[in-house]
Length: 300
Ligand SMILES: [Fe+2]
Image 1 (tube, rainbow, N blue to C red):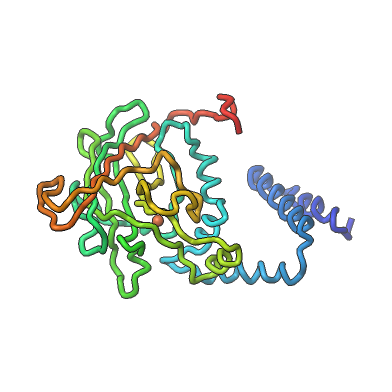
Image 2: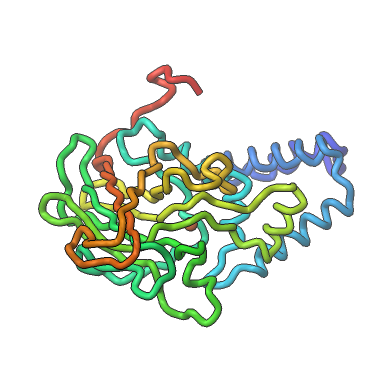
């Protein structure tokens, strides 16, 4: 057949994959074409809407720089990122739950001694973080690495602050021989995802707010274990119920205990109130088979 109507076009495109040598790629593309065509038929897409979509995706690409990833933001705000993460890191795996990496990760944060202040000169109320990194069987993991980053106490990441060129509120901390970690930073607050680009326009058109509840990001890794990209959410923070990127997980909500001015956990006197927070991260051994939700009959 050389000519196609609004139905036969779908099969025609799929058949052009016949010589594809990569079965997984062929499966993904077949499904993508099927759903994309179904979507176009379902909404009866107009030419101007199609062109608007092309223009939008073009602008999303043009908004990306080495410090800004508008495509990740698009994926995050449409719930695709957390859907992929949830499929690949089921909550019942025994590991700390994973959530979105977000657009503000900056590879290569300095490795600092335990107890360091990651937020020297950063706005915000001091917070002292501590806990352990454990294997799923409860064994402490020495030499585990926490790659930590957050916004400041006003919700701004270093790369968003005009004139700020260096890393702020970022660092990598290793656990000691008992699997313990501790460091100082600030208590993060809620903040809007960037709204000055095409994704912001999309959110406004959808009548959605752009806010994420207060959280600190971590990538936790240890030898012989699967790493986890996760957050600690500040208990009681605004927007825990309506995270703009759908990344909130109850198991990641941590209590930030408020203390009056006085000696901090490291003995150093503080002239402002401060917070302490404790959280243990569990990681799954790399060789362990992932528990299958369907086999356990836990529902879909
Ligand atoms: Fe964040």
